Image 1: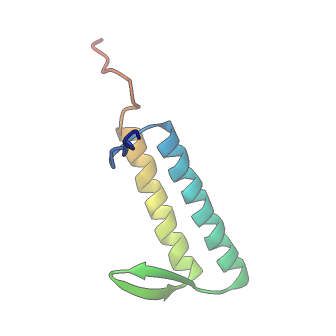
Image 2: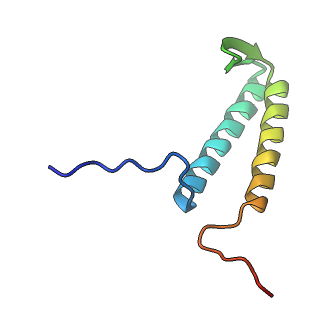
Length: 85
C-alpha cells in the first residue's frame, strides 16, 4: 500500500488559482441572485451566524476581489525568475 501524499497547504499554481476564481465567480452569482430576489444572505462572521443585505455582501465581495487581484499582481507567477536587466 502506497502512502498518500498531502499537498502543502500553501500550494500555489494554476489549478489552485482556477479553483479560487471559480469560487469567487460562484459567490458573485449568489450575491446577484439574492439582490435580484431582495433577500438577505446568511454568513459566518466573528464566530456567529449573521444576515447581511445583498448590497453589503456585494460591497465586501468587491473589496475582497480587488484585494485578491492586487495580491495576484504583486505575487510573481510560479517558475518566473527576476529580471537582472
